[in-house]
Each structure stands twice: as structure tokens, then as C-alpha cells.
Length: 216
Image (cartoon, rainbow, N blue to C red; front, side):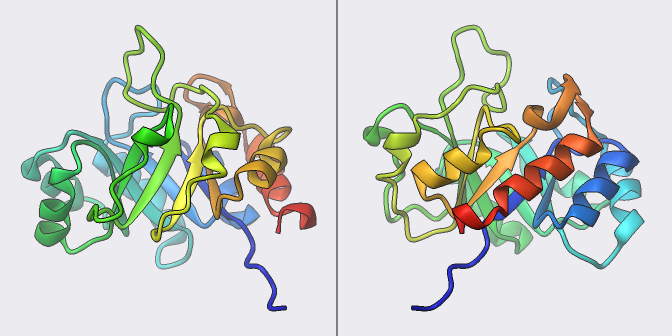
């Protein structure tokens, strides 16, 4: 039997040198920069570029998160920072256009409550970030720290890469991976001490837990 690859880890909402360094040094696969002003994790393109330059040319892959972006918005960000992946909250119809325009993989943020919310197998997205739908009154379309239905996601078997998100922390990420069977995880508030305040210690703990032998 061939060995199972280690679980992938994305640390989203990076907005400080300390958080950036901790994620890189702990071996994160992806770092997310949030370009949505309503988020407490928002960074300007220039701020993201300064952070990214701390370990220029090395892993992790840089991911830019956008909400219903226009071409001009994405283009303005890319003038300052080179992103490896575009992650969007938007209608699936926008995905192919963004990929064609900018020549980068496009992941779609996917809110799931029932199996009816799973994407069409023919969807153009290159990958998915899968979480619970936002609660009533939420000011953001995602990243609301709401735990997804893990048993439901155990039935999600897309042909594309995907990461489970929502309500993850160092003390439950192993269970989330075990139940869902997801290829990897995406965390933001679960490694913070306050909204938008990343903890280097929690980042290291989270990555170590996600990489535990029991979830490989």
C-alpha cells in the first residue's frame, strides 16, 4: 500500500510578520492574504507584498482572498504582489473568466449545509474551500468561525483539491480531518487571540496537530 500524503494546511488572514514567519517555519503549504476591507484580517496589497518578501521565492504558496471581485480589483492587487492562487467568494460563472484573465488557479469558497450545496462536477473551479454557510446577520460571506457539518463533508468527493474550513482550532483539527477525510484544512480565527490577531504559538500548534500521524 502506498503511503498517504500528509495533510495540507492553509493559514489564512496573515497580517503580521510574526504570523507570517511562524506559518513558514512550521511548514504551512498555503498562506492567505485577505483583500476584503470588511474583514478584521484585511491587508492592503502593499502590506501583503512586504510580508511575502520576508521569504520570497519559497513555500508556502501565496493565496489572495477576494469577495465578488472585478477584474480591475484583482489586477490592482497583482500590481503589488504576485499571488499563486486566487480564492474567491463569488458566483461560479466568474471563475473561468478570472482564470483566463489572470492565468492563475482559482479556488471557490463554498458554503455547505446539505449535499445540495455541493458544486456541479463540471464547475470550472480549480479547488474549493468548504465551510458552513454564514450565520444570520453575518457581515462576511465566509470566515465566521462556524463549524461545518463534518459527517456531511465525509460524503464530499470532488475531483478537485479541497480544504475544510470553519471553526477549526489546534484541539479539534485532528478530529475534523479524521471525520471528513479532507485532503487538508484552512484556518484563520482558530489561531487568533482576538479578531485579526494571529498567535504564532497557535499557528505552530495547529500545523503540528494537522500533521499528526493519526490523520495521515
